[in-house]
Image 1 (cartoon, rainbow, N blue to C red):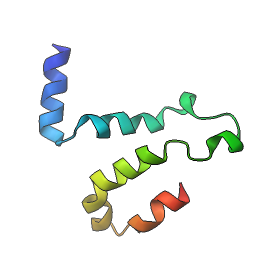
Image 2: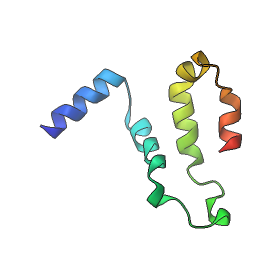
Image 3: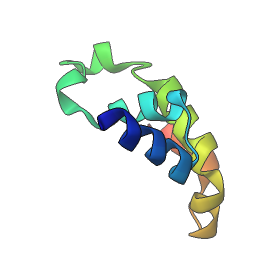
Image 4: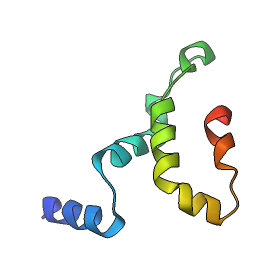
Amino acid sequence: MTDKLVKHLYTRFDVDDSVVAATSIVNLSSWPDTLHDARGFRDEHVRTLVRHFTNILNAVSVDVESITPEW
């Protein structure tokens, strides 16, 4: 049943494994403990999510070019 649900979610929301993996960025328990360790942390995840959601972000007037540097 779970496999079917996941399959339908992938189809419905047009996502691939890289986008699903990138959402792990919201798991705060995986974040580094220090600012020093945070340099470069999950940068590729942010870029993946920005690429995937660019049209939506642009539609609501988000400055997409500022997301990665601000991260």
